[in-house]
Length: 319
Image 1 (cartoon, rainbow, N blue to C red):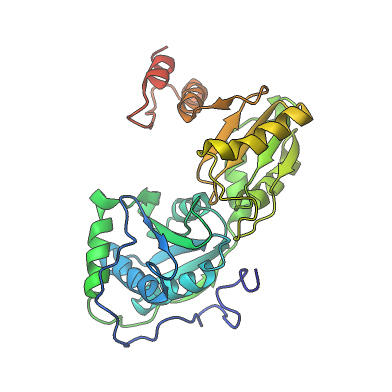
Image 2 (image 1 turned 45 degrees about the vertical axis):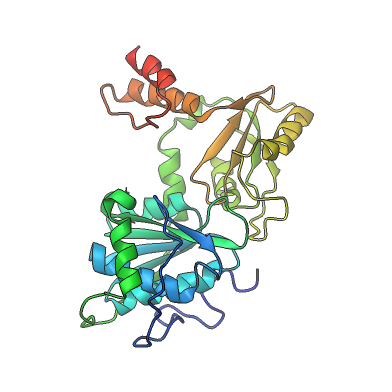
């Protein structure tokens, strides 16, 4: 992975490389904006120039003071992140560099540190030659096409970033993983958990290190599959929604006679469960179980779910 652990081989906080301020940028249409995020082939659709312009456009639209920026384990992520950060700091925005992690980590940093926004450089479950970005604003509220993403795209395409910042923003490196793990553990009473044997398939994405940090606090035996982060994805793209990708997890579960299995996508903002027989459990059943558990602790609270799949969740919540 070379310099994947830092934004640039010679970079130090406050000295990020990227497009030079003041250089003319192309006015080409940026095609990597989707409904909920940015995602495209590198460098054909997403390069450092585009990343810089997106940083400037995000700053112009959100007008944040401090933003968390994280990145996944892809080989292109350090360079794109450096350009994005340069765009933010050229706009006067201070950046908390949370380093390599998953999308959930950037969301957590944004709300836990009461920041004005967060950006994650990731292409999630896409092939290695893709990359992208996911955006939130204060309180980790997602930015999608109907809440500002199209506005950011338009500003980036037109290079309309407003007047120059009176003062360039700063960059500070922060490790939020310990706080994130503590936050995850706050959702459960570890004293009542059963000592399960669980196959965990990180798909060579970012989930492995977080599982390792959780392991000492849980009464589980983790059987680790494709556990080491590797942005080349030598065992295929980490996308358990593809049915063929589930086979290796199911076979390992059955061979180990494990109690269940969990598989993640690349930036671990989605996880997928298998029961003790290797049967894939659809996500909306998990939403129902989580709703049931959390409503027992906090009756009357709202439940957020996919509007396309409701019957199981509504049936559980109504009882």
